[in-house]
Length: 186
Ligand SMILES: [Zn+2]
Image 1 (cartoon, helix red, strand yellow):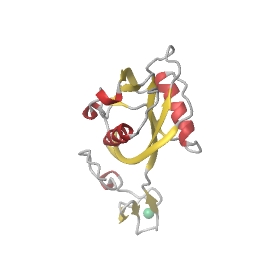
Image 2 (cartoon, helix red, strand yellow; image 1 turned 90 degrees about the horizontal axis):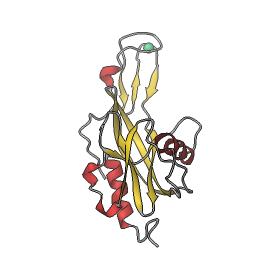
Image 3 (tube, rainbow, N blue to C red; image 1 turned 30 degrees about the horizontal axis):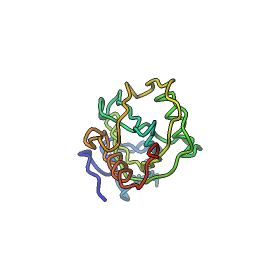
């Protein structure tokens, strides 16, 4: 499956010119995901960043955030974010949902992964987005925070995929709609 976001692809060479070890203006692409310095042998890999997102249900509806920041400010997004160093994907999911919506969740169940591109401050980050299905039993304490401006509760079958900020989330929604049974549906 190919995901097109209109963002540039590959190593952001224009932003990496000088070698951070020897200072020579010599960095060049030595592999698809790496830059290297011929003067001193320095080599740096641009690895995929791991990100998580939740198809978070409350009483059969998806809880979605409204993005507060660029990229895709104002569009709908599944709650989630980048996995920190030394953190599990499940821990990252719980942390992000607490930060963004002030909600506790049930045990997350893995759904699928999808590649994504995230441009922040002019730099392209390639990500591997991991999607989990989970539920909130109680949303009385819900409160938008962090990089979420507001939230929406939407029936998944009525959700227009084009209102989702990222193609990876659209893929997750498609997979969800193929499931024989979704949380909160008897
Ligand atoms: Zn160097």
